[in-house]
Image (tube, rainbow, N blue to C red):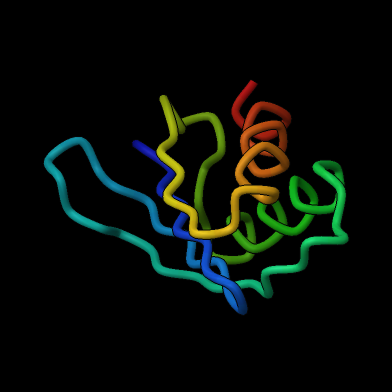
Length: 83
């Protein structure tokens, strides 16, 4: 499964893409330029777990962002989650 993250100025949308290309989950959290990578990791991990996503199945991630300062933070957050 691939973790897909699309970050805009107000919201970050998180999706899980199955091996056959289907989007299996769509979740949303607030985009906040003041959150740290640890805070984003905790938020993303929690929302994934609440939606029944097995974090051990995440094989990679893709990040799309219009907020350059959050791109680096989200990249670090994903590394905390996906190892």
